[in-house]
Image (tube, rainbow, N blue to C red; front, side):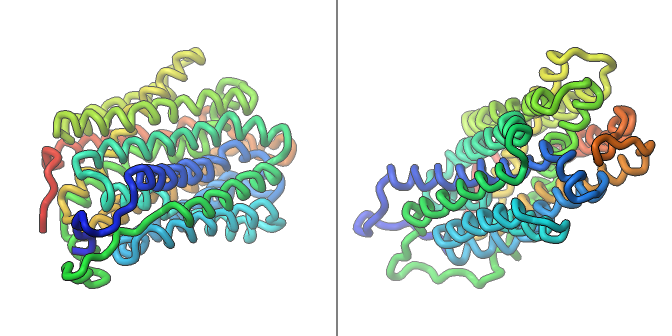
Length: 424
């Protein structure tokens, strides 16, 4: 195995230092989530500055997901092989660089490059937090820590909605992206000083071949089922919450951007509450499957109600989005199912496969929904930006409850692990 228990005689970092290290990894996921949803409060500005329509704005936002999802398997393999300290530090720094590039982009291709650098760096965020938990923390706390990382992530999603939206309206999207870049540079420095790799022990088993973990993880049908469940649960969050929800609420409810972003952020509030709750319940009762089924039902019902209940009040819309986020946060259990069906030395590759599929939903759905919106566009423009009708948004969003039902079917056939990990 690549990660071997270290005897007491070997110098070990303190529990406090390890706890701070895990928190920094989770804070990186917070930062990644801010980056993930930031374009949702910049749609009009991006269409205006780069003179593009919905499909290209969706594509610009999705460049984050192309880089993030496409690199998840290599990221997992590298974490298994080289450890988290240097990889995460460099990755956070790369996100900061990408943010500077995006903030200063004068052409669409420079903006694409900035978003791609951001996405590639952020690819190490959640995988890094889970890998750090896997190698340093007790195995029976893995689902709880996964939920805790998700909670910080969705706090980032909330931050990237109403607060960032208000700041963008007040100061512009470029200055605010510069602020985001500076935060990333400071986080990279902190990671370089605090994070620790697992020490090697004399006589320990040699590290596995570079692709051994990937071969082991990819050969497990349960890993792929877990990945499909995670993909289904995150689709609405990435497509609706991450880009198209804010302009939809602005159009359908005639709300200003800050108010619309506040309503959409209710999805992330539900997610932030649900992720640690589902993780704790799954660890407490050593059951994964019942909570996955419950989460899929809530997620599907929530997004369907948020979009298709006629003439709902703001309170009802907020409640529906909270229910959606609460249910969808059960996706954290996909990592537990995958992790418990593969050995520790394949943990990074397992996380990479699942996270690649999870974030891949955003890479596909954001531009796809933008393309559907362009097809339904009636030619209306407002200050250089395309305006889509509420009916056009509702047509584009039909795919979201369908994917939720798919997630429910997957949850029904997943094998219960009872919180027990394989050993070889």
